[in-house]
Image (cartoon, rainbow, N blue to C red; front, side):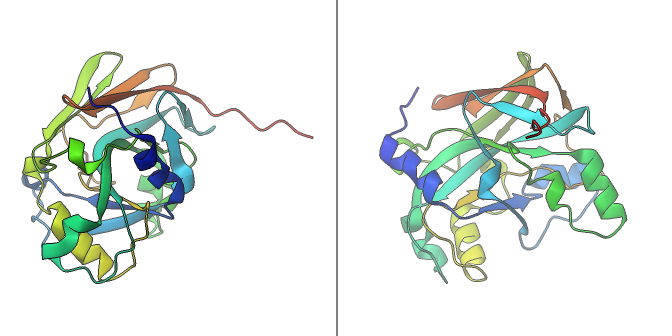
Length: 234
């Protein structure tokens, strides 16, 4: 396994936002009977939703489960605005494996009402993430195997080679609309169409279970799943 360096890990502490890309697997679009997107479907998550390796994912009081999706996280290394696709990889500071946790009931209710579903994706601990691997340790980010297990059972396994939108295009596209700052993260391999269905392997995890995930041959992470503790009154 590769060893992340502390200098790269500090990038995460500097970031201001997480930009997630939805429906970025052509196979999933086909399985769901939906058209392959012609441009990325984007949504934002707050940096306060990060959870370091070994931490505890918190299920909100009113829920019994969450849905995890394993992601390749691209960490931006310097300020990027209106970046040409040909130069985009020069702005990558490193890579990590991350989970995009979704409170499916909250998301479905919000979508049915035509409301934003930030609360289903952006709560505390809803973006578990590894330390950052420097780019020198990831020579081919478009050919990485990502996997996720729940209590030792494989739930998800896929390759970044199957994504619709590749990293240079994503950096160029996103930076044409919003400035990416040093330490910002792009979650590039989100499989979920949201609300109206989920791809194979995307299912609930419940209180008491354990999630492990990783990039084959590079790193892995582990997280417990517990009920969120109510704040003690003063």
